[in-house]
Image 1 (spheres, one colour):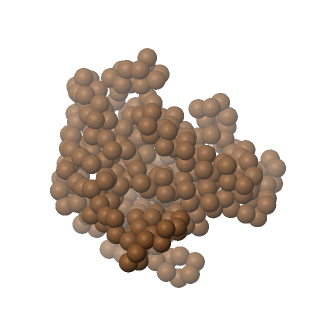
Image 2 (tube, rainbow, N blue to C red):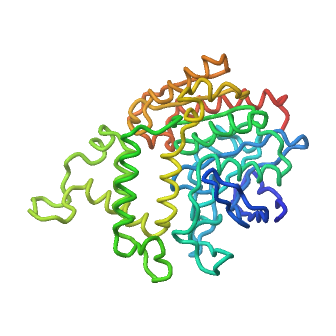
Image 3 (cartoon, rainbow, N blue to C red):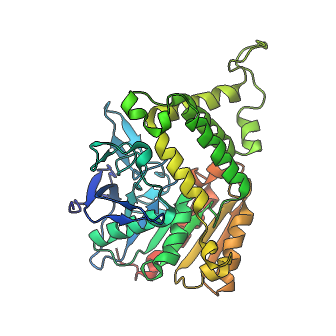
Length: 388
């Protein structure tokens, strides 16, 4: 496998992707195995001599290893990391203190092995043959990456939404390797309503004539219509009603009603724009896989439905954060996690932030939220002795 390259100087945070190749197959929860595979990775800051200041950032559905800083696009433009407001010099997760790792999960479409990758057994893209992956499978792949980097224990594992699920899974699957677990706008299992939204989005993709059963690569097409609708459905659930009303209301693009079916309201135009943009860069098979991983995550299922028992062996300290208007990952779901942690007498800090932005609040610049995370990471840093 590739050796780790020198970290990018924290002051610049010019992101340089790295590639790690793993020859040993990865056993999956389904019983299948992922043969030789690659992980796309970015790191920021400097790993200290004790290798104790590493923070793993786990990405959500449509994000990647490009967590922070600027990466150069093929057209020469800069692509700013998806959590750049959270990670960097002097930011809540301060890269002057911590060695931060972003990794793209297997099955995604940003450089790690996924459905568009070549299946070594056939010489063709995996397509529909790519095995179903779970949150636990991703955590196992991340643990192998930590081994490759010589990191025995993370100072913290952190994520929002689906990334928060991964952080929770780390704390139970590898309890001795996680000092702090930070799960934001997340939950321990999806509600039936959430699963329903995911399935409607998947059906939009699977019924697109250009999907070709998942093997659309061979036909030289992309199921763009299905991807557009899937993204529009998802994006609606990421915003709150108040946020939509404030941003768009019932504002029309023109002065009068057209009495037709094109985008007349500003909210229609916005959603179609988001869908069009998404269909240009995201892989349809990856969308199916990742939403299924969301649906399957339920650590309590192996403990007769008891989340308290599922979290019993955890050793980490926890920061759990929810947002008042997040109806997709509602505060009630975070409180269920907090209760199970308290039942086990684990150390937990919980904050429910009154923010108007819905689920997307975890990505935005809310000063109270960022102060909370910064304060918590001050504690993490202090637990390391305060040394860089």
